[in-house]
Image (cartoon, rainbow, N blue to C red; front, top):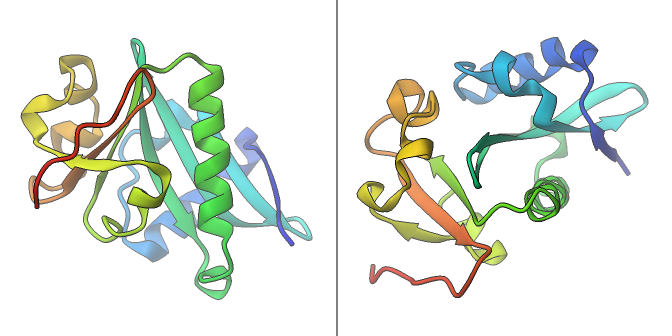
Amino acid sequence: MPTVRRATPADRPAVEQLLREAGLPLDGVAEAFGEYLVAEVNGAVVGAIGLEWHGGYALLRSAVVAAGWRGRGLGVRLTQAALAEARRGGAQAVYLLTTTAADFFPRFGFAAIDRAEVPPAVQRSVEFQGACPDTAVVMQLDLAGPVERRAT
């Protein structure tokens, strides 16, 4: 089973390769890489997830698992570890943008929201400013109180 640990600068090329293979944006990865976690098996990075901090809010980004490791619960482990980091860091809420995984994140308490509901500090992030398309689903996990779910 893979080990989940804090990423080191030496992990960045492998993480960027995983992101390229998954068709996910690299914009802002270098700047936020100090808050990434990786999953490693025998010295090889097989998954990653990142947090970006914007004031009292966290942006979950770059959740990726190597093709050969998908479907084994690794994405769940990485997401749980990142959310634990957000809680330890005192985040009021965690946001994310996704074009492919909107069905994955509700199991952690995320709910789809309108883009306009996202705090301005998070909206100024690279992800919101163009790395992710306007068609991406915006999701929020409120860590300060109950999640208000939008009717779908």
